[in-house]
Image (cartoon, rainbow, N blue to C red; front, side, top):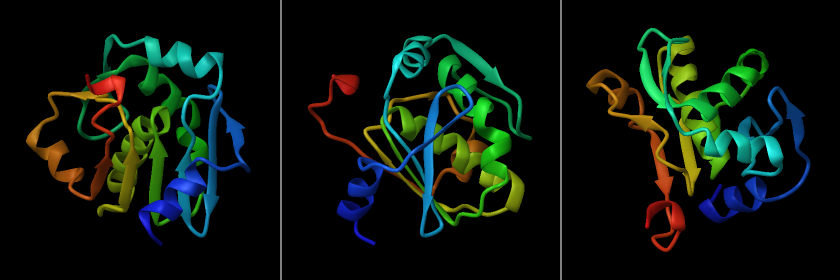
Length: 147
């Protein structure tokens, strides 16, 4: 599937809302996370304090709002069957956490594509960086998140 096709699906419809107002879907064994789509998402976006994430064997400091949103859907995600992950904006931050969780559970990396994802993990250790080598970040250089 092309990048364009992945983007069309991640910006399309058919979402399920779970946890802390997180929108997700699985299409053809690919887990998708939607961009910010409501008050709760924006509340999490702006809760940008550092927070130690300890729900893995490698603790890391990440964006508190994204950690909270991820933890609210983690049990559901762990019950789903998927082989790849795609996220857009707010959903890209969740996709990174789903990617790390997948590695933690299965011992290998899925392919993960993040469209317009914010920087949400701070000063990752070398071990965590090694878990993220199959994460492809697609960014628009005019995006205000990066200016």
